[in-house]
Image (cartoon, rainbow, N blue to C red):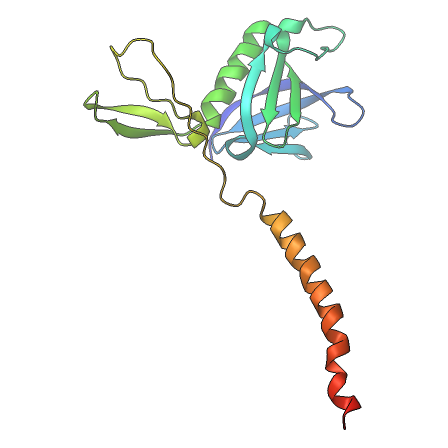
Length: 185
């Protein structure tokens, strides 16, 4: 597995919201790993960007996040995750934060080439359906249709819980009927 980028980054903890200096590795498979030191012995936190990352913001785009004492707001990087949480990072310089943002965005998506019949050429389209945008050259501005595809397994846990509850209620009601043959013997 190849290493894409590694350096020291400030990471804001999720519970106490304090900033910790961690050694950060970004691997080609989309794993963003945080270590206590640069010898990579103690893994503190790991995020799979290909599965969990929605968007990456840097600099002035990061609203509501205060950087560490010695760093300006331009050094901030905010990674928005699927579960609604954010991963707040801070680089040592503005150039480094922009480099991290571009590398994180590049790692987050897998380009897949699809055929556009209107253009008669192949275009790079991200694998995730919610990032898919088809652009036809020369079409000009117009109306945009946004297609939202729902996950087929969205809400499975709620149906499972309701099924278990209905099974328990039916079992409690049927228990009294199972004693009925013994009363007529």
